[in-house]
Length: 119
View (cartoon, rainbow, N blue to C red):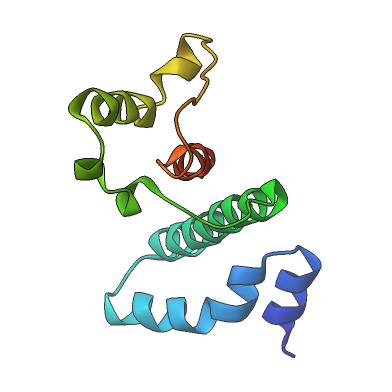
């Protein structure tokens, strides 16, 4: 392990530790300045941390399975219901401080909708 890898590990910069050579080569190919190189390297570190944070929060939520709104078949619902689901998808109820209650017959997509909202 070289000095850059050791320092990055000590600072807990795992993206930089594992990918700095790739970013160096990319920056050299594009003839970036030192400032652009450092900006790119740090931006990738931040992106990786954001992605890992999202993955951790989803894992800690302990959803029984992962479902998203993209997987939901809106055509299977009556028009009023599909419009309500699209409204929920906008998450405007959070800004308004509103609660939601999902009530319907078994097997119509309540769990799917709830998990998709959580995701």
